[in-house]
Image: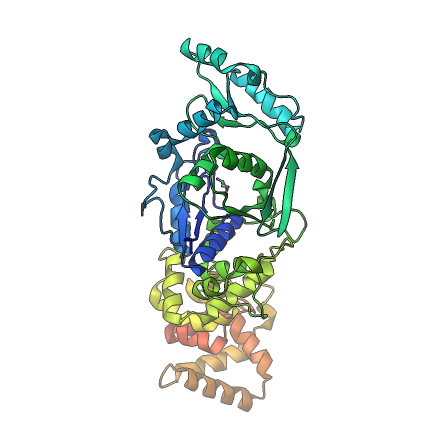
Length: 472
Ligand code: GLU
């Protein structure tokens, strides 16, 4: 059977969108499920939109999520180079574009940049009947201009009155266009760089890609690609366009409505495994109602036949739920290191390790650690004046005496002695502990208080209680 080869082909024009990560994940899983190869290719020929550093960020992010590529930058492979700006130097795009010109499927275009922009604009406004005047130049007229030193671009010649169609393996339907609605797009720019259309088809052909999975945004480009495959006499890969990811407030998921970049989610303290698990289910569902999957488990189950056609909603609460689940599934030792790294070494590993069991159950993201553990992390926190009325002098005075006389600073001892003190004094347990919380932590919402005293240590606890006594 023919080897399955999929690819992820991002353009380094900014951050990697969470939707891009989903495309990469599905392409990876589809290839791996069929023991095929997953290829990474960088499509960086639009130099005006190129963002320095974005390519390296793609490598970093894919590695963080465990989506390792079998061929591509850094690992190479039989079709290297895998970065389009490097491939330009091999002359491959020029070769394919000239074949089209020679066979009448493309033409040289000499229009100055301004005129080109106007033509593109008419395309955008869908007045595609307005074709470029250069399409009427004969090949010999065009060659004369080239010989006199003019540098042409190359534009696709769209046939008249043809129906162009293919079956989309995600949409599950035949999709077709009439050629009159197809732009005569630019294929090769006068500087020798291919546009996206030429680059993507040449490279998918050369790299023997069998299945293309990509975002829905690219569907309008597909008829152009179909024509190119036909004119190159190249095998047409199976093509599938993934659904749009919707924002719960409506419309497509967009930056204006919250984080959309993978790096932002990581910086906010989401675990890569949780993000990955969450996006697995944005367009795919297993046969049962199971929700938790490792990448390996997902790969085993993933089949293109299970891809959904309804646009999924990016439910942030669901992502939080996944993250909390993953935090609780992670061993304390590993989590301690992750939190230590997340805060750039701001809190010692030892302190994190001690506090973690007190806050782990309530943590949704790594960043929550600092919020939930705040009273135990820094110096003695000031007492919130709105909470002061909850602190009773009598509670504190007697507690100081009891705690000061403890033979060892252990949770069982603290629990027992404080329970006995509450009983013999006839206090209400809730009132007493509210007093203690506010006195020690400065506020009413704290990690479990007796456990917090253990973490703080005897000296700091007594210091805080005495300070509170002076404050009230
Ligand atoms: N370079 C395109 C992008 O940035 C790739 C689209 C495709 O997969 O064909 O998403």
